[in-house]
Length: 251
Length: 251
Image 1 (tube, helix red, strand yellow):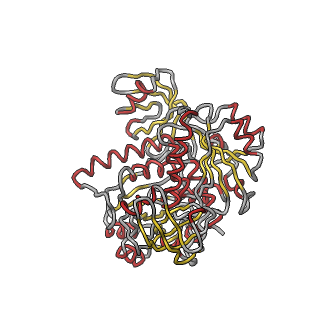
Image 2 (cartoon, one colour):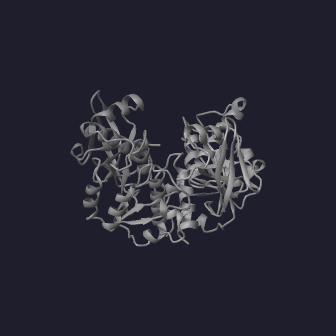
Image 3 (tube, helix red, strand yellow):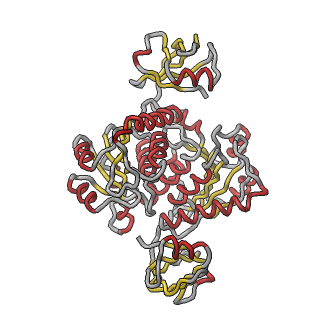
């Protein structure tokens, strides 16, 4: 399989791409590629080119653009995941797998019952690390968009954010406990290709009553994700898989 | 939330349930429960009872059956996942998340390109450990069935197993690279509630040519899981989520 690299717009001209930074190490040392080898370069505006390496130095790789590629690997719906902070590496897991499954953006969420806390002083470094996970998962799954990782938000900030979205919803475990549940399908049937959707996922202990009330008050709709109770890191994967199934596979 | 425990059939009579083994420690020491507290007991034939603890000793917990519960958390389709052996704890991840998502059975698969090997001498212990993960995930997601973990199988054994299934399929990454792909929907539309489906998931490096030919020769159908290339541990979660969406949410 041909390796894929995201390269910033200002490193492209009509015929060449110049790669800097960590990817130089990956190309030269990890993959042991040489001039003449082929890679795929992806520009931030989702232009894609098949490139031939012409020169490798210790700090840059120069490539010649052989051909332009048109392909569409992006989910037709733009899904922004508001993910409650959880134990251990759950946020990392959600970002890695959620990126593979086509998420557009991630917003870590300081939920009332979040066990792990977000250290605002270390936020910049943390976001950089999460952004790197998203970049690698995008390359792995051959996507043309790298999801953006936002700073962690409070419920108030999430409510303000919601104003600009076409649809806003939250996965609520109580929906799995009633016969009058709102099915995920009843939500997805109101969504069209091109829509931006904001999805809020609760923490291990579930949403607090205050959060549930706030969500409903601001027009967020709750829905069910199947009959079983899912862990907080599994719920967004179910949601994204279903959006893909509905919009890419079912049509 | 009331704690749930799976209790073997021979420990039940009409009025009482007696719990042995590790769950005794969990009830007494981890949860610090006392006589008078309520738990949910689930029998292997999927009968469920709300029980009140009457006595806790160091090696058993005795409970009085207060009421019988009827609930259905099981996926209407019986999905057996043939999961290629992969790096690190990928098999464990698939069993934990796949159980939450409703899988019926797991068969570890010795694929040609599997990086991790299955040590037949240590198989019994390994399966016990995997079975414990499945049990805990079943309790977490409030299921009434614990998926069975089979011994690791060769391609020949998987083909023989396939004979008894209503449908047999494999997730093939090449389907995501052609405009004439077989959509997951075209497969699920041929499935009915109550059917048993065998799904084969390839390893990190993909199926070998030999395996792909063998699968097609034995009537396995390939399908696509969205437009993106998924990791081996993400593919079964996409599949199970879509089965749940199609059969539990979409109707």
